Image 1: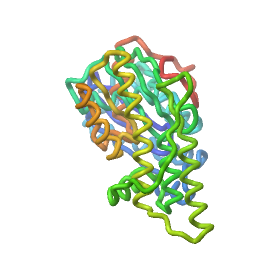
Image 2 (image 1 turned 90 degrees about the horizontal axis):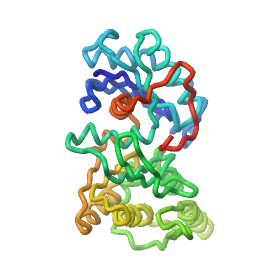
Image 3 (image 1 turned 180 degrees about the horizontal axis):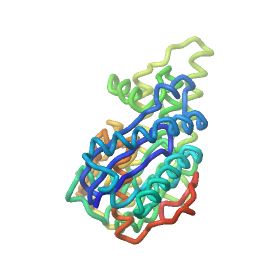
Image 4 (image 1 turned 45 degrees about the vertical axis):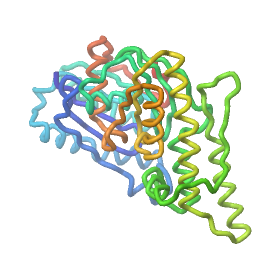
Length: 335
């Protein structure tokens, strides 16, 4: 089964053709990073307009690279939530028009489910059940993946997402947007241990997280250094910040594994590319006897292939939609 898949939840337009949920025939991506870097973050209106400009040509590219014609497409999948509402609407609307014109099913895919499914493309042996740590610019979740389409949130951030905090910390350190990769590169130049950063606990919810205090602490360090004329140890702060984020994430997902009895853990999302978090997860899983699946870096960020992968399993579960399908800025992964 060949699925034409669309992803446009933020600042990357992505179109892919995926076969049977596991084989990527093409994965075309048009990034807007250079545009939004001028503003230090994603400008929603600009993102939406750029999606409109490139999505038709990108679809042709994806079909061409897959060696497919429109007649070869069996279904169309698209991100319908969550994300920047204008951006999601562009991809979803185009996908609806493609499904209607081709006379094939339309499959709605939750963006975070797509990130989790990126691992199916990299690891043919991976099957539910497992625990997923989904960490990105807009979401930070610990998810019990009971089956391909049966998922329950066990823990979540109460405020900022981990990826958003990396971007804000990068700005304090004078690094470009998006901040994840530059922060990681800078952090590798230091062993850290210089800055004492806060670690939050959520009373009554041991698997939930909070990153707003950590973000504020880094901003305050930057302001203080500027006011007294001191130089920040930028590499050490980048390393200590990454460690503080990892210290929020890794112990909680390992605690969730103990609570649920899961022995398989999967990472997903853009922040899963961070080297400190990846190393800490590997050590923790070895110590606790769990098998860890880390997506290759190219599948950590937003892409269309992950939507095609999850779309296949949504289709098998009977989760298709009509032309009345709407886009949503927020949506529970279990819905």
